[in-house]
Image (cartoon, rainbow, N blue to C red):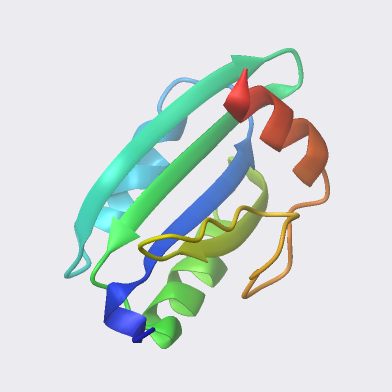
Amino acid sequence: MSDSARRYAFVIEAVDAPGTLVRVLTLFAVQPLDLANVSMVRGESGCAIRVEADGLDPQRAETLLRRLDGLAVVCSVGLGWRGPVQVAVAGLPNILCRPPDHATSLAAEMTG
């Protein structure tokens, strides 16, 4: 599968504060990509944000990961990808970068 056929999924654990989602999405807004899906779930320990984007190469995805990790509102961030048939989420197969510290709790919050 070519890199351009991948949909990158960023799974972010962040503090639940005013403007958190806007701060996270601002990093994506200045990139040449197409957002495919954005979701946020609030929990007792903060919020879980999932952003799926098309049109990224692996280096750009890694750069976004580092920039997200540098935001003050972000507690942890993970990166995965999915192709036409296969799905990868932080903490499961096909992880490209380090999974978040609480990947299991994030996955549970994201799937409801």
